[in-house]
Amino acid sequence: MQKELWKGNEAIAEAAIRAGCKCFFGYPITPQNEIPEYMSMRMPKTGGVFVQSESEVAAINMVYGAAATGVRAMTSSSSPGVSLKQEGISYMAGAELPAVVVNVMRGGPGLGSIQPSQSDYFQATRGGGNGDYRTIVLAPCNIQEAVDFTQEAFDLADYYRNPVVILADGMIGQMMEPIVWHEIPKRQLPEKDWAASGRQGRKENRFITSLLIDARVCEDHNLHLAEKYSRMERDEVRWEESGTEDCDVLIVAYGTPSRIAMSAMEVLEKEKNIKAGLFRPITLWPFPGDRLRELSERENIKAVFVVEMSLGQMLDDVRLAVNGKKQVKFFGRTGGSIPALDEIVNAVGNVLKEVK
Image 1 (cartoon, helix red, strand yellow):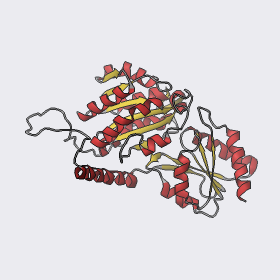
Image 2 (cartoon, rainbow, N blue to C red):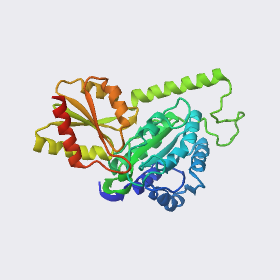
Image 3 (cartoon, one colour):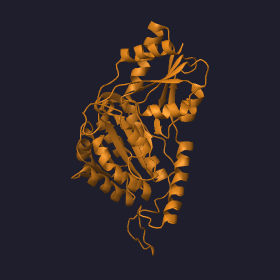
Image 4 (cartoon, rainbow, N blue to C red):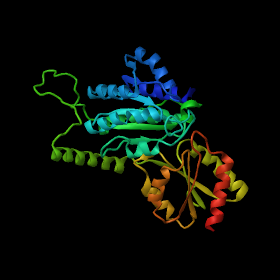
């Protein structure tokens, strides 16, 4: 298959269109602006709808409305913009509406910087809105994965009737890489017999809401959702391993830092005679904690080393998984700064000196 050079944000937008996205609603914010810009050009040509809303709050509620009719709908934003969308994401989870939300993360808190970051991990994996709800969170480490995950996200959303989040740091949105457009494996999807798409001769109305006044009815609905989230945890956990068979230290990273960690592994072995392995979560939720726990119990692994473009958010999930079996150390840059190769190499070397 022929490779094509694409910018990350534009590739994500094109992937959504190829996945059948018919409605895009968004509001400009750096560093994801190329997504709505590309959508404004391409959606009308493909029979879709593009609307630049008056705010992020309006955009997510437009997604709610479109998803309620059964069409594939999407929005994108960056960090503070996604914060404004949290109410609508909670509403969609409660109403069981499928949609795709792309967050191209920038530095925070607040308005922060426009540089790449990973400080929205808590927001994405814990649910930034109210209530007991979850969203599948896919974290690409390159543009090929961003394309593949975006296309698959629409199937996941339809399969589970739930919002799905693509969580990419700003580096992935802004960089250019060669990719291959290929067919994504399709799921057997249920019919959308819940969609509010007109009576069409039916006697009953289809009423979509997350408002359940009766406490017992609301509790039953929450238990139904919890069962669905349990199936996600059972069936949708993903990760990637490299060099974990005989490593001295296990590096845990996702997104751009995982790429830097791969280079650090080579330098560590060549220059410091340290064997490092990499464990890369692909689904940040559900988090691959069981596999990480198994790896941490191996005698050859002296320490677990977490690298993030934050002050340590995935770190909490790593500590829960390792459960005290090994020391968990951390290195992070925040506010839009990116960990350098030599910083990771030196930090790993110091960690092994401490634990020996």
